[in-house]
Image (cartoon, rainbow, N blue to C red; front, side, top):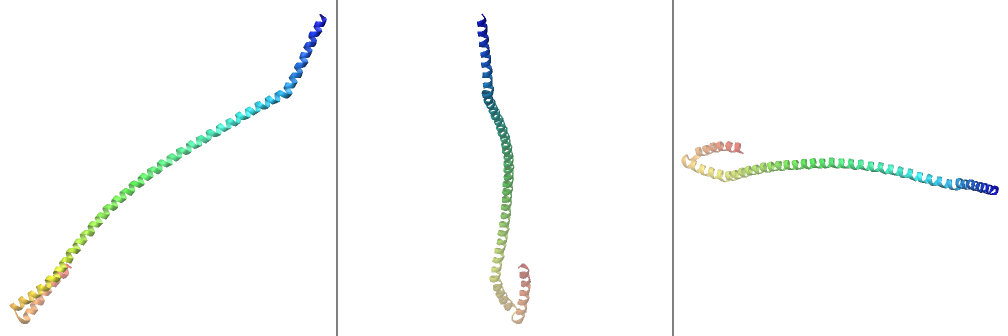
Length: 165
């Protein structure tokens, strides 16, 4: 029995020593490797978290920029519509002014045509009327008296023609 007891005690002592050696080997070799891996995993998690936060911040900035650009686009679109409306109104106003101007020019041209025709008729009719009047006055009154009456008649005619021109 005593041998068995020593044998068991020896076995326990070897097991205990083996456990201590195994513990030291694990503590010196395996634990640092595990700690490094845990540290690497934590570092990767931290990097992923920072990258995720950076991506979220970038996404938010892009959303804000898109919103600002949409606002600018709508503002520009409104300005273009207002500008287009103003241009159309100015073009319509210019067309109306051009029509009025053309009408005025046409009226002046008609008046000039009328005055030109009147002048042409006067150039033709007045000399003939003077010749005819001279002949009639000469036949009625004869001599110098007819010339003085003709001059009076011409003087009476000329101021009326001068005032019409």
